[in-house]
Length: 581
Image (cartoon, rainbow, N blue to C red):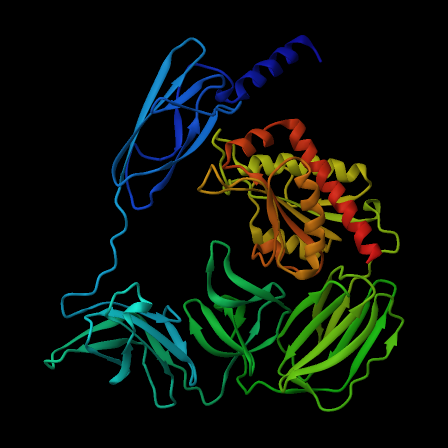
């Protein structure tokens, strides 16, 4: 490298050094975001950054400043005005002060309604609804106590005991089962209150309701194999909880709508929801069939083991797993076995037995016993024949023989969390993932990545990539975040399906060896890359970027490398475990 290039690189290096490395006193706060705030929670935080080497006091009390120049403290407020003076002092004795004020007033204590009126009504399920006969609506309302409340053409509501509502009278509740005579032509529900003088007051629901009266049930078919079912149309920041994916053209019996989701009847004991755009209803309408299962096959070839049964149509299915002993459980909704079904194994290496069950009259169950803990499987249709393709555990388990899917979380216009230094999650997930890629390739593994540069990749595209490429194991690298920068810190892993727990546990155990606090190996997580069943997966939330101590660690290149090395050790531990179970 010639001298001019060295000088240029040196200049660039100086430019990109974060401002917190050195400089005169300053204060930049992440919390609170304003100098004056009205709050109803007494627990608040002062968190931000100053120059490295600066000291910080809050109302003359010293607080810890990390090597990155960050600090975070919790403050418990008194009712009324709470003023804090934050002062940074640099190495030259120069100071910089910032003042913040919180006005704390506790949330008002609930009180009984004193005027003759209805304050509010809450109806579940919520949202604009299309309902079917037999569906149930639940209501809770607050109004003037001691009156007579009613809805649905004078059907009474019961006033609830004050003891059930923090000692406050005037709450009413009830339920209503939709009857064949009900129309509800996209109208609002009227709730009425009548006092002892015969006066009435009413309030209409914020949402609209109508009843589906189709002589022929409404049906639709899934548009592709990325279609998924959810347990509810509502959810958290990750969306509604997903039950699982379905193959293309699966027939669904639609019994209602809630917002942008269809409600579908899977079987007599189970309903689910599906986003409206994922269902094609422009199909010939006829009553959904009940399929009699008689033809079943269990076999193996050079690639995998298989179980398949013939059905009268492409019916919906749900699935779960058991780890020890290894089992796959697949329920086909709308099917039953009229007689004994063949369970003869032909050339299988991973499947040790198949049992057929009938947990209800219209649900046919496959229980597939395995030699090892599950390694992943696919469910798909060929014509009207449903097949479960079971992955085999390789005879010689070594990273050098495996394909690892590796996802660097966030990217581009999706920056993820931000640390107190101003660093973004998307930057650190990419650094960690590239280090992990190198470490895995040094072990001989083949690595498939969602991104290797700073760019945006939609989560749906990440999912589609991995479901198409079908790696042996999937790892998604992230950093956690919390509104509490003081008490929330440590390393965590997250998974959805039972068969992914051992992989996550092995990686998590190794990450805790770095000295990070144990924030848990957490189940039932609804992240999009936790949902596939084709391979074991792990969501690795390495640490809390929002916590100044954790952030200080992850900004250290040596610690980043240690994280990557520990994940590789965790993978090796998992491979040893699965061969010995």
